[in-house]
Amino acid sequence: MGEQASDYTRGEMEIQEQLATYDLFMGMTKWGSLAITAFLLLFTVWFCTPLGFMAGLISAVVTTVVGIVLLRDKPDQAH
Image (cartoon, rainbow, N blue to C red; front, side):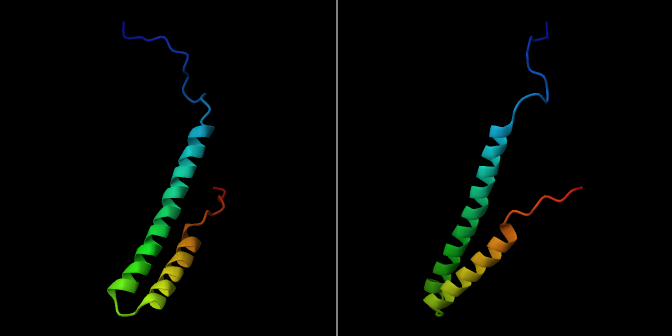
């Protein structure tokens, strides 16, 4: 009574589309967060401190460069 007929066998389903969607979502989240952070830093330093536009631009560029270095995809290491 509790048994259900099913053709599904665990581990045999193709998951390439799911992996591609996950990778796209993670990439958009990662790079979008970096862009939002850089813009917020630019506008915060520009408008909320007496340092002005150039200080905000420099801090945003430095944050972007550091973020790109830290967030880029690293090659897979063999275990």
